[in-house]
Length: 121
Image 1 (cartoon, one colour):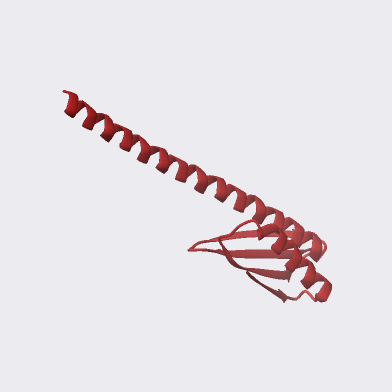
Image 2 (cartoon, one colour):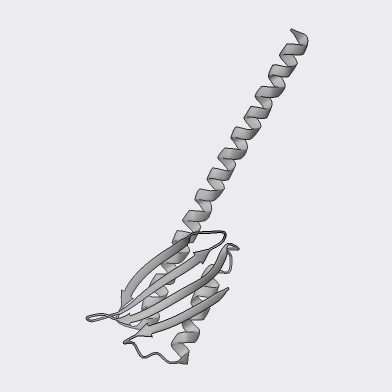
């Protein structure tokens, strides 16, 4: 997974870059469908805005935006929102997969019951 960090009007040093990389890697490490992430820091009226874009495999993406008075706090908030979105997506996909599996198995049971009734009846 690759994390790209850019800024517009926000000077950031290697500590902020390392912190953003660490925070996103630790947030996304549990997810095997992540291709990469892009972090963009920008200076707002009175706060630093952090936009995070995560590209997913095989397709799709997740976005989060936050703002705070300091870059590290904005990164924290955006990473927390990304974590919540990724967990929500994982639960949704798991639920859909379970529903498809249950529907498929109930069709198999129905076919077996119909075949058994045709043999005995």
